[in-house]
Amino acid sequence: METKSKPRARTAKKAIALTVSNPFMPTECKVTKFERQTTDTYTLKLSAKLVHEPGQFVQVTLPRVGECPISISSYSGEELELNIKQVGNMTNALAELRKGDTVYIRGPYGKGYPVKELKGNNLIMIGGGCGIAPLKGIIEYVERHRADYGKIQLFFGCRTPEDLLFKEHHNRWKDKFDLSLSVDQNPANTCFEGNVGFVTAMLEKASLEKDGSVAFMCGPPKMMAAAAQVLHAKGFHDDQIFVSAERLMYCAIGKCCHCMIREKFTCIDGPVFRYDEIGGIQE
Image (cartoon, rainbow, N blue to C red):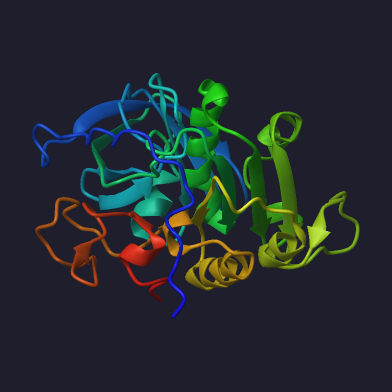
């Protein structure tokens, strides 16, 4: 009987896990910039010099409103950038904040993308909709450590050209990396010149090196599941694919048990998992 070959991804030393001294104590910080990205998403920049890894998240608190987990969409150490989709009371309240306003955060929490462990590999990033935000943190990390990685391929897709995130960075990303953009629909009278169709269609047509490569994904579960199928068809193994899972995370420290996936806590064992750790994409 045929057996699977050994992992194709090159692995360096294991990254040191970050710890939080007091997991329940939020830190006050100021909004330094509010930027509307699309009709229902926006970016908050906060005065928080936070040591974190790409793919981790923070709990954001507004007194008398609530608290919610938000993925970090930057990597600088000087400011913290959060890309937020308006979906409820808390995210609508955060959308009212402007420069100088106060917000509270605790974290960082969870396990991010293993960028430090996987030095020497080619990186393939696949993002859909708001899932592009955590991948932006990886891009900024790679920009600071470009010599540590091989070829960088970015496959990002959204519903329409108006829904594309971080348009102000696209030209820079195209100059530095292999960036492919797609939209599900392209209404008339737009200037979009990219692909029309699902992001997985771009992935199917792309030339991908399976040896010495890893794929980092974030986005809707159906998109990630379809992208994983494409990667499998191209010869990628589960241990070369990393996904960011989304669950209700109240405490962020594995106490409330709302975010379990196959006996793993999304908040502390994830949100980033190797594909075989959780048996594929969980709806």
